[in-house]
Image 1: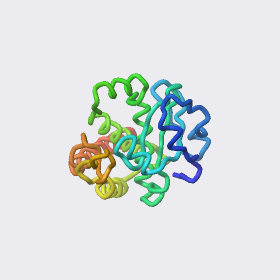
Image 2 (image 1 turned 135 degrees about the horizontal axis):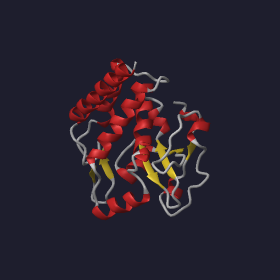
Image 3 (image 1 turned 120 degrees about the vertical axis):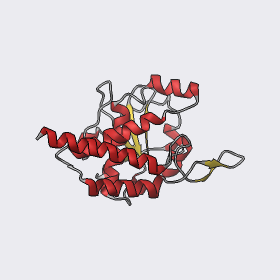
Length: 207
């Protein structure tokens, strides 16, 4: 992934989801990244955001998918942090976020519903993991092997292996970690490996 082509994003601007995001960034295909489209067939825009901004928005630190108030689907990436991680993991993160859009997880309707229920669904994260892995295995441009998946799982454990996010009295994040609704990283990696095995069998059968 050539993250250097991704445009930076002002945290102050995007903190207000009512602010139009049209023109936020170029289409992914034109920016050296694989094409990504939403469940509605829209081109997904990609922009850079800081780790601090991502943590404030969703207790994450590498990437976030969402839809602007004008309906533009967006992927935010902490390009500085991701650029220091293995390429296999960079690709996995991008396609994981792309999968959220492809599966309709972050349409405006679903975002409003989640805000009302004050919860997020673990199954959608696991589904996005699986779609990402299957894309990386089946797409001839990548053709990931078990060795590549091992790199992803090792990086997952290193980067997302915390237990939860903790805040101080003022609501500031004081402990890095994974989403509060995530399962232990070992279980998540085990399911990720299952997806790889399914994709590998499908690839062999297709030959």
